[in-house]
Length: 324
Image (cartoon, rainbow, N blue to C red; front, side, top):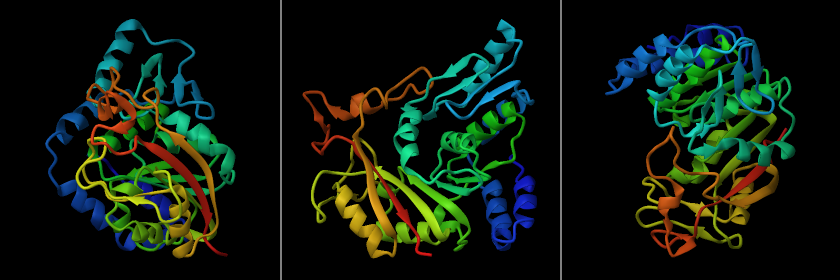
C-alpha cells in the first residue's frame, strides 16, 4: 500500500500547510482501510516497477524519461507489461524508456492551450484538483513549480502516478492524495489552483468554486477548465440523464455564464482565455485505453452532437484571481 509519510514530513515543515496534519492522516488511514477489488493486484505490479533516477528527464516539453544506455529488449518488454497492468491510461502521454504510453487523452494539447495564459509557475505551490494520474503535475514541475499537490479519489490514478514517480527516482516535489476537494479544510495555502474537467461532475458548481477559492492564498490564481456550451450569460445545459455516455454530470454553462459564476463567488480579474471543440484526435481509444471513447459518444450522422443529441464537447479555460 502507498506510504504517505514523506508528505506528512513535508507539510510538517511548512507553516502554511502544517494545520492540514490535524485531519489528513486519519483521512488517508481510512482510505487505506477501505476495500478495492483491484488494489492488491495493482500494488503487486507497482512493487515490480524498477526504482531509480533516469539519466534524462524532460518535463518541460513532454513527460519523457530515458537512460543513456537503452534498456535491453527483454527489460523493456517486462516494464511495458507491468505498466499495461494499470490499464486504462486516460491522461498523458508518457514516454518511459522508449515505451510510448499513448493515453486516451492528449493532455499535452490542453497544457499547450493554457500555459501562455497563466501566471508562471516558477517557485509557486500548486494544487491540482481532480488531477487524474498526475500528468499535468509533471508538466507543472517542468515549469519549475516548487510543490505540486494533486487530489483525486481514484485508486488506479494514484497507482499510475506512483509508477511514474518511482521510475523518476521518487521525486518529492509532487504528491497525489486519494481525496476529493470536499475533504480538504480551508487551507488558503496555494499560489495556483487548477480544476480541470471537474466542474460538470459537481451537483453544486458554485460550492465547488468557493471550495477552490478557499484553497488559494490571497491574490492566488485559479485555472478552471470545463465543458461549456455556446450562449450568453444565462445559458446553462443540465442533461436529464447522460452526456456523451457520462453519468454523474450536472451543469454545462456557457463560458460567459461561468465568468458570471466566478465573479458571483468573489473572484476578480476573470478572463475567458480559450474555447475549443474537443476532437477525436484529442480523445480516443488506444492500446493503452481500449474502452470506448469520444468517437463512439458522438452522433454517427452528425459530429456536432453527442449520441444523446446534446451539443458535442466544447471546453473552455478561464483564469481568475482571489482578491488580495
